[in-house]
Amino acid sequence: MSSSSSSRAFFFFFFFLINVSLLLTLSSAADPFVSYEFEVSYITASPLGVPQQVIAINNKFPGPTINVTTNNNVAVNVRNKLDESLLIHWSGIQQRRTSWQDGVLGTNCPIPAKWNWTYQFQVKDQIGSFFYFPSLHLQRAAGGFGGFIINNRPIIPIPFDTPHGDIVVFIGDWYTRNHTDLRKALDDGKDLGMPDGVLINGKGPYRYNDTLVPDGIDYETIEVHPGKTYRLRVHNVGVSTSLNFRIQSHNLLLAETEGSYTVQQNYTSLDIHVGQSYSFLLSTDQNASTDYYIVASARFVNESRWQRVTGVAILRYTNSKGKARGPLPPGPDDQFDKTYSMNQARSIRWNVSASGARPNPQGSFRYGSINVTDIYVLKNKPLEKINGKQRATLSGNSFVNPSTPIRLADQYKLKGVYKLDFPTKPLTGSPRTETSIINGTYRGFMEVILQNNDTKMHTYHMSGYAFFVVGMDFGDWSENSRGTYNKWDGIARTTAQVYPGAWTAILVSLDNVGVWNLRTENLDSWYLGQETYVRVVNPEVNNKTELPIPDNALFCGALSKLQKPQKVSSDAPSITGNKLKLLFTWLVVWAWIHIFQ
Image (cartoon, rainbow, N blue to C red; front, top):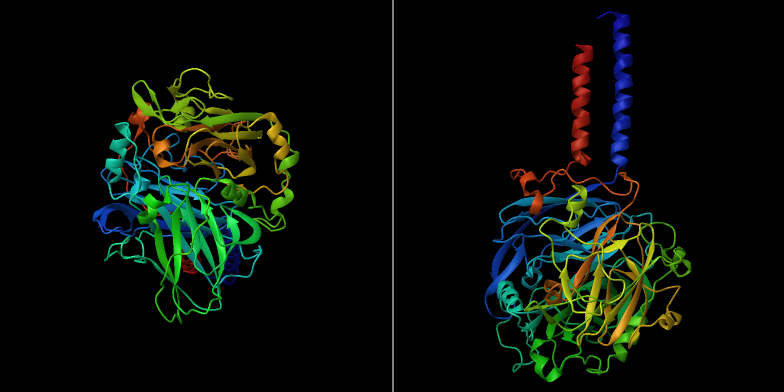
């Protein structure tokens, strides 16, 4: 090779390296991709001493915790080893610009038995404590749930010192009957009855009482070091029972709930309703003379019948001097008077001085000064017969899931799949069964009043959004009730409780395009139709406000003919980290060989 040719080759090679280095830099700066493999299957377990069928993920019950950071792209490949269809719902995860990955039946086709499907979404502009669970066929009553933690980016401060560790705790009522038997009972118009127990992290109660708790039950033990502070993330993943959570001789410093930092205040116990998540700062400041009880007990029930249902775990210091003993720490003494619990709920306030997922303060969103564009009063009632079947209603409508999901019907312009006629006020005539949904106004500001005329507690969840809980009180809501609203630091969360004979008011900014589920979290009422969807459409079609339909979309109902044969793939569509470095090395070698040889 001549000197001029060699110089020219060196110039081209140098230019090539600069471009590849630039590509490497740009690619490395992209939001990271985090991948998980979920194998969902049945296992046999005996959480209450009775062998039963349980839904496990990767052979674990509860399933693994997903741990990511704000802006991460998440891919979860779900292998359905069950004998029925499956959807995984990411409760509280506000998937910006896509309801295609939400995992509820009105939005997504289910994953057939023995198939696998990969969820892909970005946890954008979020932090906090959440969980996932199977949303179909009452499967959550059999397990299949796990934690979902979204951490702050390192540049965003958290409003407390970094804890020594994270502890995830699942509490929930539990039946020893299979979820298929529970489902059949509801189909036959029967009540589920009193649960058989309360589990803590998938395990039964510690034997604090030889009469109430049989021998041989495996219980949860949480080990901590003395003189430390832990972040305790507690989720009620049960069927329908509100639970009071407490730890003997310890205060619970509330720090965050479902993505919002709270004003920090101590509670000796806190009512956690179905579907809700809280994180506390737990200081291990006791003398460890013995282990300590962790208790989750049923609320608003006849305690004499429910004593056997209480969940009990153990908090053990590494220097503990003995086993826990004596009676359990008492819960609130207001079995039938719910005022204490409501006042406790009202005391939970937003920390408007703390940063969220972004540097700007959470409280900079002045929701109290925004004009409301849509008002919906949603009222529930006790179960009632419609066409000979026992159903649950919301404003007189019992929701019927369409065979073709709503969002898919919109994409392919199918007519007659649903109706945009959900009533703004409760229907006055006979109840109906319809696929009736709310027509939300894109970039509108919706006020929703949840009126509970049932005899039991309900919690309501809205996918795709965090809403502001601005008021709650007993009695019927009226226009004058707005005078009691908290218009400054009402907590922003995804699941709000509504007490029997009471109302809760929420405000939500409809800036996330998609079709989003609004439902009760009580599994029995949800299964029987107490839900609807909020359809939010940008009239200007573009990929900036909603991502396109995913390449691996499942098809069902009227679109079944579009379904392609199953393809098994668990690779995330991204080149990151070591793969990118390996690619760079191969490119350099290739360039050297082809330019200088």
